Length: 294
Image 1 (cartoon, rainbow, N blue to C red):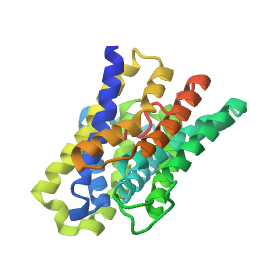
Image 2 (spheres, one colour):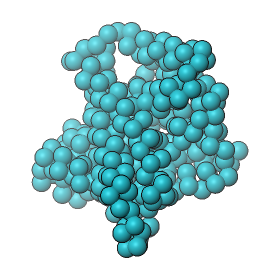
Image 3 (cartoon, one colour):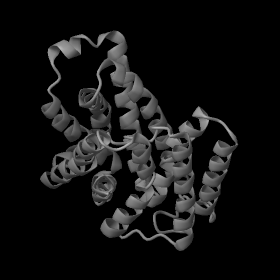
C-alpha cells in the first residue's frame, strides 16, 4: 500500500508542477516555462549523476544519436503538452496524451481485446469532444480548441517515441545518466524557443523561481520516487497506476488554476483511463511505465 501511495504522490507532483507553470502562461508563455523546467531539470540531474568521461567517450555515434533523439522526443512532448494546457483543460489534455502509450500497447499485441480497448478509448474521446471544436472557446468556453487538441495528440506521439527511444538509449547508457544527458540535449532545443517566446522576462526572479519549482515538482521528485518504487513494485502494476495521470492532472488544475470539468468530461476521461489500464494489465506491457517523467 505504501508503494501505491508513493506512485500516486509522484503523479500528483508531476501534474502539480504543470499546474503551477500554468499560472505564468499569460505572462511568459507555455514554451518559456518548458524551457525553464528542462534547463533546471538537466542541471539537477547532471549534478546528481555526474556522468564520467569514460561513460561519455564510450557512447559512440549510435549512443549519442539515441541520447539526442530521446532528448528531442522528451522536449517535444513537454512543449506540445504545455502549449495544449494553455488552450484546453489540463485533465482533458493529459487524457489525449495517454493515447500515445495506449496506441503503442495496442499495436504491440493486436487482438480482439486490443481492438476493444481502442474502441473504449475512442468512445471516451467522443464524449470529451461532444461539443465539437471552437477556436475561440478557450479553457472555459464551449467546445475544445482544435489547436489544443492537435498539440495534445502531438504530445501523445512524442510520448510513444519517448518510450521507444528510451529503450534504445538505455542499451548505451542505462539509468539516470542517460536521462540526464537526454534532458541536457533537450534543453538545447527548449531554451531558444523559450527565449524567443518570453525574451528578457525569462530572467525575472519570480519566473526563475517558479521555473525551478516546476522542475523539482515535475521531474526531480517524481523521478526520485519512481526509482525507489520500481525496485520493489512489478512494472505492470506501476504502469497501471500511471494510467491515472489524467485524474491527477484534473485535480491539480482544479486546485491551482480553478479549472472545473463537467460530469460528462470526467466520464469521458474515465473511459480512456479504463482502456489504458485494461490494455496495460492484459498485455502486462511496461510501455507506460516511466513515460513522461522527463
